[in-house]
Length: 208
View 1 (cartoon, rainbow, N blue to C red):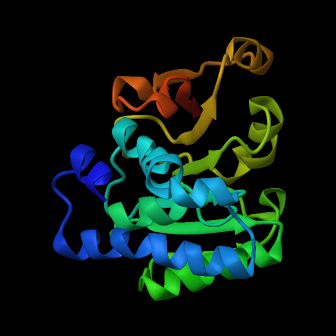
View 2 (cartoon, rainbow, N blue to C red):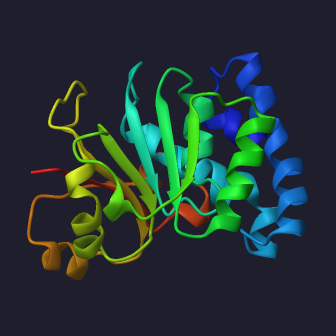
Protein backbone atom coordinates (compact mmCIF):
# COMPACT_ATOMS: atom_id res chain seq x y z
CA UNK A 1 0.00 0.00 0.00
CA UNK A 2 2.88 2.41 0.68
CA UNK A 3 3.94 1.89 -2.91
CA UNK A 4 0.50 2.87 -4.23
CA UNK A 5 0.25 5.92 -2.01
CA UNK A 6 3.63 7.15 -3.19
CA UNK A 7 2.30 7.42 -6.74
CA UNK A 8 -1.41 7.95 -6.02
CA UNK A 9 -1.48 10.06 -2.83
CA UNK A 10 -5.00 11.40 -3.35
CA UNK A 11 -6.89 8.12 -2.93
CA UNK A 12 -10.03 8.37 -0.82
CA UNK A 13 -10.31 6.36 2.40
CA UNK A 14 -12.74 4.04 0.62
CA UNK A 15 -10.29 3.46 -2.25
CA UNK A 16 -7.44 2.83 0.19
CA UNK A 17 -9.55 0.24 1.98
CA UNK A 18 -10.41 -1.46 -1.33
CA UNK A 19 -6.78 -1.56 -2.48
CA UNK A 20 -5.73 -2.86 0.96
CA UNK A 21 -8.07 -5.85 0.56
CA UNK A 22 -6.46 -7.01 -2.67
CA UNK A 23 -3.54 -8.90 -1.10
CA UNK A 24 -5.74 -11.08 1.09
CA UNK A 25 -8.32 -11.63 -1.64
CA UNK A 26 -5.78 -12.74 -4.23
CA UNK A 27 -3.86 -14.91 -1.78
CA UNK A 28 -7.11 -16.69 -0.94
CA UNK A 29 -8.40 -17.12 -4.48
CA UNK A 30 -5.01 -17.92 -5.96
CA UNK A 31 -4.76 -20.84 -3.55
CA UNK A 32 -8.08 -22.17 -4.91
CA UNK A 33 -7.65 -21.29 -8.60
CA UNK A 34 -4.16 -20.39 -9.77
CA UNK A 35 -4.46 -17.13 -11.75
CA UNK A 36 -1.20 -15.43 -10.72
CA UNK A 37 2.26 -17.00 -10.45
CA UNK A 38 3.19 -17.81 -6.86
CA UNK A 39 6.13 -15.38 -6.76
CA UNK A 40 3.98 -12.57 -8.17
CA UNK A 41 1.41 -12.88 -5.37
CA UNK A 42 4.12 -11.69 -2.98
CA UNK A 43 4.81 -8.71 -5.27
CA UNK A 44 1.14 -8.10 -6.05
CA UNK A 45 1.12 -4.34 -5.54
CA UNK A 46 4.15 -3.69 -7.75
CA UNK A 47 3.78 -6.25 -10.53
CA UNK A 48 0.00 -6.30 -10.87
CA UNK A 49 -1.72 -3.39 -9.13
CA UNK A 50 0.73 -0.56 -9.83
CA UNK A 51 1.48 -1.98 -13.28
CA UNK A 52 -2.25 -1.87 -14.08
CA UNK A 53 -2.46 1.71 -12.80
CA UNK A 54 0.24 2.74 -15.25
CA UNK A 55 -2.67 3.26 -17.65
CA UNK A 56 -3.98 5.97 -15.29
CA UNK A 57 -0.71 7.87 -15.67
CA UNK A 58 -1.40 8.05 -19.40
CA UNK A 59 -5.15 8.78 -19.29
CA UNK A 60 -7.76 9.59 -16.65
CA UNK A 61 -11.08 7.94 -17.50
CA UNK A 62 -13.94 10.43 -17.27
CA UNK A 63 -17.28 9.67 -15.63
CA UNK A 64 -19.41 7.47 -17.89
CA UNK A 65 -16.47 5.99 -19.81
CA UNK A 66 -16.99 2.37 -20.84
CA UNK A 67 -13.81 0.27 -20.72
CA UNK A 68 -13.26 -3.28 -21.98
CA UNK A 69 -10.49 -5.39 -20.41
CA UNK A 70 -9.58 -8.22 -22.80
CA UNK A 71 -7.82 -11.33 -21.48
CA UNK A 72 -8.24 -10.00 -17.95
CA UNK A 73 -6.90 -13.16 -16.28
CA UNK A 74 -7.38 -12.59 -12.57
CA UNK A 75 -8.70 -9.07 -13.13
CA UNK A 76 -5.75 -7.00 -14.35
CA UNK A 77 -5.69 -4.23 -15.32
CA UNK A 78 -9.47 -3.93 -14.91
CA UNK A 79 -9.93 -4.35 -11.14
CA UNK A 80 -7.33 -1.75 -10.02
CA UNK A 81 -8.61 0.69 -12.67
CA UNK A 82 -12.19 0.16 -11.51
CA UNK A 83 -11.18 1.05 -7.94
CA UNK A 84 -9.40 4.18 -9.16
CA UNK A 85 -12.24 5.25 -11.49
CA UNK A 86 -15.52 4.42 -9.71
CA UNK A 87 -17.60 6.48 -12.16
CA UNK A 88 -16.40 4.54 -15.22
CA UNK A 89 -17.89 1.21 -16.34
CA UNK A 90 -15.71 -1.86 -16.83
CA UNK A 91 -16.39 -5.09 -18.74
CA UNK A 92 -13.73 -7.69 -17.95
CA UNK A 93 -13.59 -10.66 -20.33
CA UNK A 94 -11.53 -13.81 -20.62
CA UNK A 95 -12.01 -17.07 -22.50
CA UNK A 96 -11.18 -19.14 -19.39
CA UNK A 97 -14.11 -19.59 -17.02
CA UNK A 98 -12.15 -20.23 -13.81
CA UNK A 99 -10.38 -16.89 -14.19
CA UNK A 100 -13.69 -15.09 -14.60
CA UNK A 101 -14.93 -16.80 -11.41
CA UNK A 102 -12.03 -15.19 -9.50
CA UNK A 103 -12.74 -11.79 -11.07
CA UNK A 104 -16.40 -11.99 -10.07
CA UNK A 105 -15.55 -12.98 -6.50
CA UNK A 106 -13.00 -10.19 -6.11
CA UNK A 107 -15.31 -7.56 -7.64
CA UNK A 108 -18.16 -8.70 -5.35
CA UNK A 109 -15.94 -8.59 -2.26
CA UNK A 110 -14.86 -5.04 -3.13
CA UNK A 111 -18.45 -4.04 -4.04
CA UNK A 112 -17.33 -2.85 -7.47
CA UNK A 113 -20.83 -2.57 -8.89
CA UNK A 114 -19.64 -0.94 -12.11
CA UNK A 115 -17.64 -4.09 -13.02
CA UNK A 116 -19.08 -6.86 -15.17
CA UNK A 117 -17.09 -10.05 -15.78
CA UNK A 118 -17.88 -12.49 -18.56
CA UNK A 119 -16.40 -15.59 -20.18
CA UNK A 120 -16.39 -14.59 -23.86
CA UNK A 121 -13.94 -13.97 -26.68
CA UNK A 122 -13.43 -10.37 -27.77
CA UNK A 123 -14.34 -11.20 -31.37
CA UNK A 124 -17.90 -12.00 -30.27
CA UNK A 125 -18.51 -8.67 -28.49
CA UNK A 126 -20.83 -6.04 -30.00
CA UNK A 127 -19.49 -3.25 -32.20
CA UNK A 128 -18.91 0.39 -31.21
CA UNK A 129 -19.53 -0.24 -27.50
CA UNK A 130 -16.42 0.92 -25.60
CA UNK A 131 -14.38 4.12 -25.53
CA UNK A 132 -11.23 2.21 -24.59
CA UNK A 133 -9.93 -1.35 -24.60
CA UNK A 134 -7.26 -2.18 -22.00
CA UNK A 135 -5.11 -5.29 -21.78
CA UNK A 136 -1.79 -6.72 -20.58
CA UNK A 137 0.36 -8.39 -23.22
CA UNK A 138 -2.20 -10.89 -24.46
CA UNK A 139 -0.58 -11.23 -27.89
CA UNK A 140 1.23 -9.18 -30.52
CA UNK A 141 -0.31 -5.85 -31.39
CA UNK A 142 -1.47 -6.60 -34.94
CA UNK A 143 -3.65 -9.66 -34.19
CA UNK A 144 -4.90 -8.04 -30.99
CA UNK A 145 -6.19 -5.01 -32.89
CA UNK A 146 -7.90 -7.40 -35.30
CA UNK A 147 -9.84 -8.88 -32.38
CA UNK A 148 -10.92 -5.63 -30.72
CA UNK A 149 -11.05 -2.78 -33.25
CA UNK A 150 -14.75 -3.34 -33.99
CA UNK A 151 -15.58 -2.94 -30.26
CA UNK A 152 -14.33 0.65 -30.04
CA UNK A 153 -16.86 3.48 -30.22
CA UNK A 154 -16.22 6.37 -32.63
CA UNK A 155 -17.62 8.88 -30.09
CA UNK A 156 -14.53 10.28 -28.37
CA UNK A 157 -14.56 12.63 -25.35
CA UNK A 158 -11.06 12.25 -23.86
CA UNK A 159 -7.72 13.94 -24.47
CA UNK A 160 -6.58 10.81 -26.32
CA UNK A 161 -8.70 9.40 -29.17
CA UNK A 162 -10.71 6.27 -28.44
CA UNK A 163 -8.68 3.12 -28.88
CA UNK A 164 -6.51 0.58 -27.08
CA UNK A 165 -4.32 1.15 -24.01
CA UNK A 166 -2.01 -1.86 -24.06
CA UNK A 167 0.51 -2.75 -21.33
CA UNK A 168 3.58 -4.31 -22.95
CA UNK A 169 7.26 -4.80 -22.14
CA UNK A 170 10.61 -5.06 -23.89
CA UNK A 171 11.69 -3.83 -27.31
CA UNK A 172 8.50 -3.24 -29.28
CA UNK A 173 10.05 -1.70 -32.41
CA UNK A 174 9.42 -4.71 -34.68
CA UNK A 175 5.92 -5.28 -33.32
CA UNK A 176 4.90 -1.66 -33.91
CA UNK A 177 6.38 -1.70 -37.41
CA UNK A 178 4.45 -4.91 -38.14
CA UNK A 179 1.23 -3.16 -37.12
CA UNK A 180 1.99 -0.38 -39.59
CA UNK A 181 -0.23 2.36 -38.15
CA UNK A 182 0.14 5.16 -35.63
CA UNK A 183 1.02 4.05 -32.08
CA UNK A 184 1.77 6.37 -29.14
CA UNK A 185 4.33 4.88 -26.74
CA UNK A 186 4.48 5.90 -23.06
CA UNK A 187 7.38 4.53 -20.97
CA UNK A 188 6.28 3.61 -17.46
CA UNK A 189 9.82 4.35 -16.27
CA UNK A 190 8.85 8.03 -16.73
CA UNK A 191 6.27 7.61 -13.96
CA UNK A 192 7.55 4.79 -11.70
CA UNK A 193 11.15 4.41 -10.43
CA UNK A 194 11.09 0.69 -9.56
CA UNK A 195 13.38 -1.56 -11.62
CA UNK A 196 10.39 -3.68 -12.69
CA UNK A 197 9.14 -0.80 -14.85
CA UNK A 198 12.39 -0.12 -16.74
CA UNK A 199 11.17 -1.73 -19.96
CA UNK A 200 7.41 -1.54 -19.36
CA UNK A 201 5.25 0.65 -21.61
CA UNK A 202 1.69 1.68 -22.33
CA UNK A 203 0.83 1.68 -26.03
CA UNK A 204 -2.03 3.93 -27.06
CA UNK A 205 -3.42 2.71 -30.36
CA UNK A 206 -6.20 4.85 -31.86
CA UNK A 207 -9.05 2.96 -33.49
CA UNK A 208 -8.32 4.57 -36.85
